[in-house]
Length: 163
Ligand SMILES: [Zn+2]
Image 1 (spheres, rainbow, N blue to C red):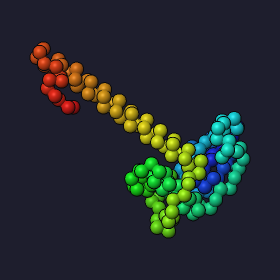
Image 2 (image 1 turned 90 degrees about the horizontal axis):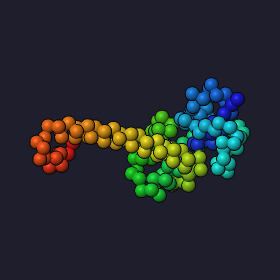
Image 3 (image 1 turned 30 degrees about the horizontal axis):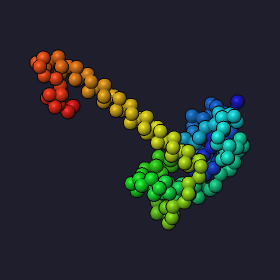
Image 4 (image 1 turned 90 degrees about the vertical axis):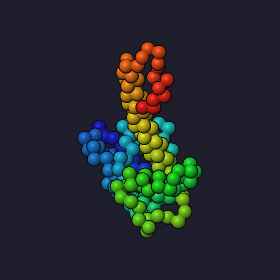
């Protein structure tokens, strides 16, 4: 039983045994966390850019340039800060892009890179929401404690306490 690892940076595809997937680094361009497809049916809507097969992928250096250009395209479209490109590039490859890698122009990202960015955004939002929920729970607990201490005619709102 094997799964398919699809690199969103260089297009390298490799069927691997389940046990080996904890490595989750592209053996061609070293991008982290390639997309994992559990079986052929799981490709689903992604069939226009993933097929169940091994593929060599483009050379690593080309993958750096292409990924940087694709990130820049997304950054321009979405009006993100320039730093966003560098942070995502670092997250993907584990090093900052050097001048010889950074292309002059942005380049429409591949479906695979778009998918990665989408997945990364979801992950970020989940973390943020978890943080907010933790904050909210803390505020509610403090509110309860304050209510116990307040004279009965005053509510926490009256104090205007921003905790
Ligand atoms: Zn790769």
